[in-house]
Image 1: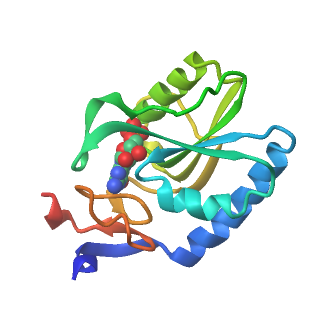
Image 2: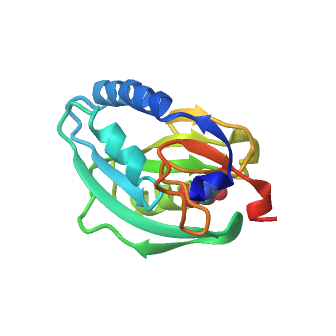
Length: 178
Ligand code: 5GP
């Protein structure tokens, strides 16, 4: 069974659902009257964005973009735009939805890009944060859970494109990638 490769459950579905309620309430309060454009980074952010957006109670729009930076478990360094936005974000308040902030390189590049497209403000909500791995000086304004340095899968996070459909965040067994 594919879930046999999970070493342990780190964050349960119930914990994620409950944290999304809190994050959604905070974001709704902070962005009242600002009609944010909520941009999900494909593909990892999709389950988190779906859960979060249900708890956002103000006018907002949803957009997606795709960048690539990883293959397997290690960073390849450079960040490439694979799918760009479909609309202009000039003068708009943008909220990026990310699955995890690790080294911070992806967010640095994406924020830079969105500001270069004329965004008025660019903030970040991330399901997970691995602060011990940070290389770039960048923080998400809203974080679901801060986690230790382990390779995690589930709730959108993959290992070679698999496991995104697990309903929890778990640690992948080391033997799967060693
Ligand atoms: P960063 O640019 O911050 O180093 O990396 C961000 C991206 O790396 C995330 O969007 C995610 O795709 C990938 N990543 C970083 N850590 C993990 C992890 O523990 N598990 C998985 N599945 N992906 C990760």
